Image 1 (cartoon, one colour):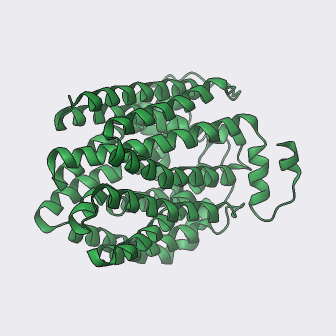
Image 2 (tube, helix red, strand yellow):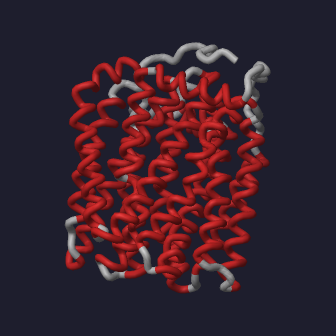
Image 3 (cartoon, one colour):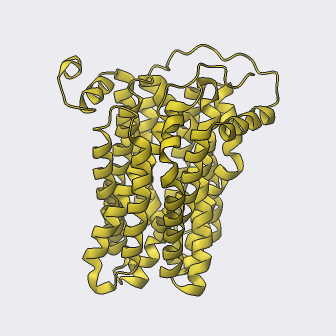
Length: 429
């Protein structure tokens, strides 16, 4: 890897080689990619299992909401806890619990003892784990690579996530078709085990101990919320994230219904839609690797909100006889969402004060997971009455209205975000 670090590469790719020259970051990448792939294998299995048990779009929304509702409830608290304790230890604990969850799901699926209510309860359990896993998982990237390499590391992490979005659903769909959902959960458990081992092999980043807080954890949590609302750049980025999370990303949770009811392709169609979105997302992640600076990321975020909204509407209007076109369009949705989300996270991570990082990222996780959960719940209920297409088109139209509002403000937003962050101390403890 020393040889890679010395290579001369254009643009952001030279930063990537520097990032990959860090041993612990390489271990993180290996484990993270494997874990994300297992996550998508299991997400396909959970969605298909919920559809098999109920044949109900509303239940698809309920299960998606249950997966992410704990983040809505606990996200702010989890971020404050991350700022107070050893976030690396928290990451190891929550990853081990994710492995336990996967094993339980595999056993229940193999034995046939699972029904929609036990699936709902276990999904809530998994969502609780993720609520504490996410802020620590995001915080560790900054401490492994530092601020200078952060854009490269966040972009590469997006590429990893979206590569797994392509590979995971393909693996999950194939396993479900040929072996059943039990094996999908078992394979997911083995993939989670790899990340658990990688975390044990990593050396925890050496950071100064945070000063003991004399406030309650609720007061610390509210302090993080006040900091976010007072920062003009982060506040607006979170508003953008909230809208797209609620009204664009729930489309993925509706894929089982689209694959079976609209396109008539069953589990095979579900895997193709998930994989097509993953291919587009991989392309978006690859493009983001070429960005080695913060300048221009604000404009990129806003532009791709419009692209994502238009391609979503086009996908929704596609019929069963044009399934190939639907796959191409959903690839465009995946591309635009990845570019927008990666730019958004990079800008927030770069602008936040160091002593507020855990709390702001906890709030980021609350919105990034809670928004799709609430949106999927509402979209699923609406789909019961108006069909699958109408709620998706309505959500995309709201995102277009957001773009119309935000685009004239792009320069002010860039001025607040594409700058060096303040020193630690932005939130006194």
